Image 1: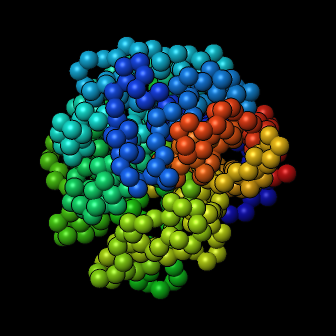
Image 2: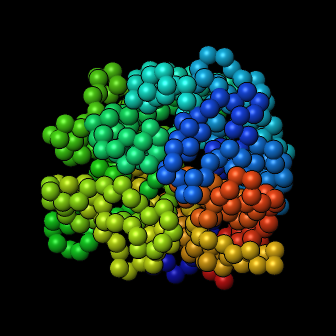
Length: 483
Ligand code: BGP
């Protein structure tokens, strides 16, 4: 929509950057921390790029003061980070590890010292290994109460200092990659029935946690984050229009409708039920999901859009060999037989990992969500994974600036069009470990000197050009974006 006069970002807009415990902290065995499923999974040969492990990561556990001082220098209003469950409960439940509580208390206090609002993700994929060994982790209903106990422990200890809580990061990624593609723990391939059941357990854990949080009356806000890739129909052929509806229901609204309305979308449910994959839902669960909806805000991790095209029942499925190499064009067309497939978009450039770069898609996505749910939106991740070159001690990442700038311009347009966007988190503040892509796929505004080898590099922090650029954007509350 065209507006002659451009609007501004709201005065209290939260300029943020995000991370996840496993990707930054390191110290994987320190101060009583238990092992997580990722500590084990990365050691299986062939699972991660060049066999990278997160034992040391970027050593945020020891350098958090230096990192938060840099965030303050950049002007961040918020820092989104996750808590490692196995630092709080080394066995996932039972005895509490005071040293874990202390660490996050210090981290939170350090943020508050600089007036940086902590935004906490309760679960960003690093399940305590003990729960996986005991009852299969997310496969069992037992996980629901253990998660609830972990989450409420966080609310008890940090609830007075933390206003923004995110129950889960991207269940649509970790469940799919864990139970259908074998690329995340527990590494199961094509177990569709369990994938949807696991996802349902996550939804119940989310709902119980939201209700428990509200009961505690701490005055903060609780939401959830999904990976969000809005779609276009390949063309105006009616069957492709329907394929878009199938993609939206099965890939997007299957998750968002739980957060927004506390129910699954009907067409997707019927399709999965007919295939024998739909989760089992009790009456009591139905009521619980409804009672917890809507969340206070929807978190979206936005990196790309998708194209939807019809896909016959004997058509393509999921590809087990995604592009984790950074070699452009090595990704394949994937889909759900009998519903849709996702060919590439000829109108958009892509990253070296074949992710379509689409700033307008972010605006479109915010518009779609606003029309459907009318809830506040947190852009809980957005950024560019690229191979950075250190030249004479500097990183000139004009490509990253251009990426973030173009997305922020469209975000501002979305705000003008009525979307209630409250925060924007750049992924990421420092470089960090990409789960499957090692350290060559860098996202940070701050370079970290290390590579895939565990003993490599000084771990020194070097501000990239994008750091200085983002600082200026924050200082002017996004006024000079178009320059
Ligand atoms: C999201 C995850 C993040 C981060 C990001 C970039 O899915 O929530 O943890 O990893 O994607 O992904 P990648 O590192 O695979 O490029």
